[in-house]
Amino acid sequence: MHRLDAIVQKLTTVGSAADVPAGEDDYPRAAVAAILREGAEGAEVFFIRRAESPKDPWSGHIAFPGGRHEPTDESLLATAIRETREEVGIDLSRAELVARLPDVPAFIRSKRGRLVVTPFVFAMREQVTPTLNYEVAGTLWVPVASFARGEGKGTYAFTWEDKPYELPCYRLEPGQHVLWGMTHRMLESMLEALA
Image 1: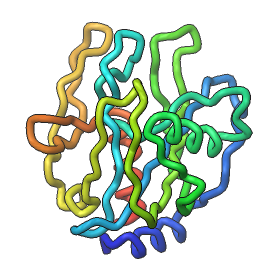
Image 2 (image 1 turned 30 degrees about the vertical axis):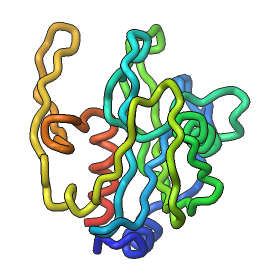
Image 3 (image 1 turned 120 degrees about the vertical axis):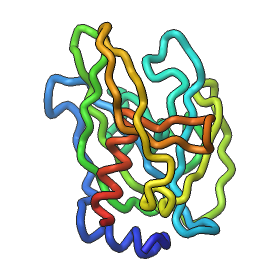
């Protein structure tokens, strides 16, 4: 079930790949790209490790490439495509748009209080070599099967406004990367759709 073609077929039948216009509500919007490819163990999903920056609330986190919607973007899909090209040099116009996952709210420290993120899933059928910009410290491909088997599943201790939380996470490449928060919620919604 974890071959790329089987995942594409399943996601196509359970979800929509329809684009989403930005500006349907008062919240700032963003979009990300969950990119899949065929690897040695079946389908793999692409992640970035965000560069460390005091201006970035998600500094150092494992994430999907993407970012905030700009007024010049025609749509949220256009945002995901533009941001992916800018951050990692991958041209998603050469990939297959498979599905749009449910929106994920992100609570941020701003006057508007939250950001709504729309994830799009793409299937990449050709080899790509990421070219990283200053926002990205590294990239990794992780087999979907490892998530389905629950490898690295655990909790992550997080403090928000002086309150401690234990949030679900995946530990990737033991001791090096922790996938949690919004990206974890997006990944889980994709895995649920595949179940």
